[in-house]
Image 1: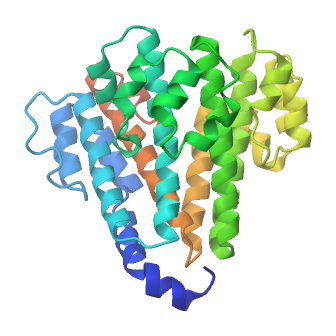
Image 2: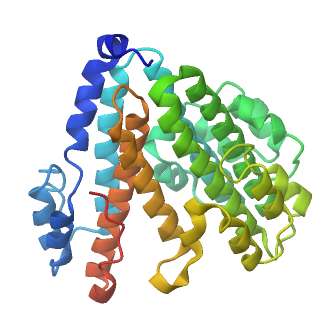
Length: 345
């Protein structure tokens, strides 16, 4: 992996394509043009002047923000599938790992929707295209975790991650959240080990990114578990056994009873010291997104690493959130809030 000769021989073409995609990420001046738009039709024209080109050209007027979201997502899926179709091992396996997070999201979306008696067809339409798998429609008929595993997930890549979920019997609200976080914990730990096994710059870049993701999940799980029925010992089991916070920080988060205790714990780690500063007017989630953008841009400071592929997906997702935020502000006439997006370049 660390050998440039081998990297360029196996992955040079795909890396070149990716860096071409990366050069099309929206700049601050383009965002400035977007924020000057009065209508969504103006925004459509401005997007047409970027690398998105004719993406929205054939959509009927008036264009909805949901259509913009759908089209943006499909453009990323098309790029990703092209990269994947040209990748060889171990890059192809790395790209496969990226899709697992979307599979987890889709599984949780469907079983939660089924619990609330939502329409099956509507649920399947809302699933992320990168996380679609063959037996997914059968998720709608599962009533217990064992049934979910044995009839649907046993032959998917998520099967090993379900090992720690089978103790939960009923698919109720609390158990579904426990399943979601248990799956993500297993996924992050597995992906982290895979990246470390690759060694070189990939292990370094992805190690930094995934450790942050593990910390973010630990902080969010702690805050979201306040005033719920989730026992503290169960909360601790949901924390990934990795990250800057692990093990001292996560041990403190496991016994925290209020937000201030989370704040005190995180402020002992210099990376997260400013995350709980309320004077900036930004939310904790905004701070997380900003730091995620920083880490993903850092991935491009190193050559010959697979982290750039993961980073590109995450940067594009932030770009989509920015565009949709601006579009929503325009459509709802909330121009005073239009600049509250997360700049990337």
